[in-house]
Length: 237
Image (cartoon, rainbow, N blue to C red):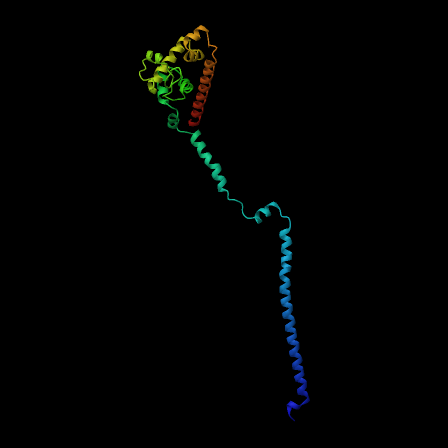
């Protein structure tokens, strides 16, 4: 009997066809399910991630989310630069202090010769001319210590604009005023500004506003210069 015409052969062919169809259907189903899962999984992750980002965050988290803050070196440069200047300005060497004070050597030398406080002479020079050796007043006073021509001549000052000659004559003149008024600094300053005759006539400081302001100004700077000297000595000690 021909096997192809056997009844059992048809049965096996039908069985194979069913298995094949079931397999194809199963593969199709699983493939479609996998694609569907992949497509739906992406939105699901986004949906769970988006609310997390949208939730209110503490300050630290917000700063981190917006990116790093500016680097600190800019602040350090701003705060450190002045510190260097302060050290140079307020902790100078002795040589630097002398160089920064105009005519320091001449003032100290001449003041020592006539036994006058060099800080007081420095204050007089500052009040009279502002350390300008070419200064000239409307009344004709000249140089650092503003000597009148007649006074300069009597003191033997040949070049009134020469700092050394002018300081020499001015200190010598102020020394004579201190001696005349028994060491009274205010009366000596009043005489230096307004003349000895007015001090004698008023038996004290003349009631001239310009002279009174002058005395206050000199004494103010005298105190300031003495404090600077004392402060500098403490730093260098």
